[in-house]
Image (cartoon, rainbow, N blue to C red; front, top):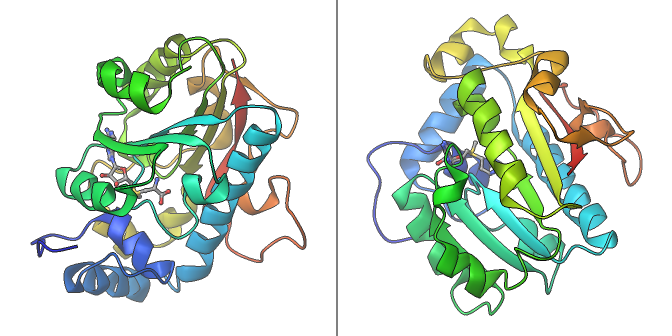
Length: 246
Ligand SMILES: C[S@@+](CC[C@H](N)C(=O)[O-])C[C@H]1O[C@@H](n2cnc3c(N)ncnc32)[C@H](O)[C@@H]1O
């Protein structure tokens, strides 16, 4: 990454917590300040990234080999194309700096792309790029990955976005989702750092926003407990999530 950003990015803070190399001093300072107000975060974000990997692999195991990722952040440290090697993956994000950094990271990977995209308006994602990166996105099920993003959308915007995503993709498509539970209510200083546009939710409230998407029998659970590969990671239940089907 070349350009030095003036403000931290949650995506690069996560990269720092995951032990990556795609972050800057401003991100490290923000991450350490947040940890001062909340507590250690690395294990929580490793658990969340592990959930992303399990969800993507379970989607792939059901025959889906094309993924559209919203609010993708930094495509490294076990992101979707690394969890499902060989899959067609289109990453999207709203933040131009993150898109630029992401593009550098996936440049030269044949089946992988990164373009600007607002998750609140998924139908505006460039269809030419969709056609090139996910050649069968209109005819075969797509895995939609919607992680680390719900907190930045209010209820009405989130419900609308999830509804538009449902209409965007063929039957049989899957949606991997997560959201911030109410964990930060016990840490007002940390919560204040997230700003006024940060939305935590109860599982039932998030479930209602899924609209026509049908959650699998796994339900909406703390991400560490979603189809664990082994012993469940001992982390706070800060993020809940699941898998839903069209
Ligand atoms: C907390 S990071 C999560 C990144 C990644 N999904 C992960 O799980 O590590 C949130 C990301 O969502 C992006 N974002 C926020 N609002 C968005 C929107 N309306 N549409 C697309 N991306 C958005 C931010 O730029 C940031 O990269």
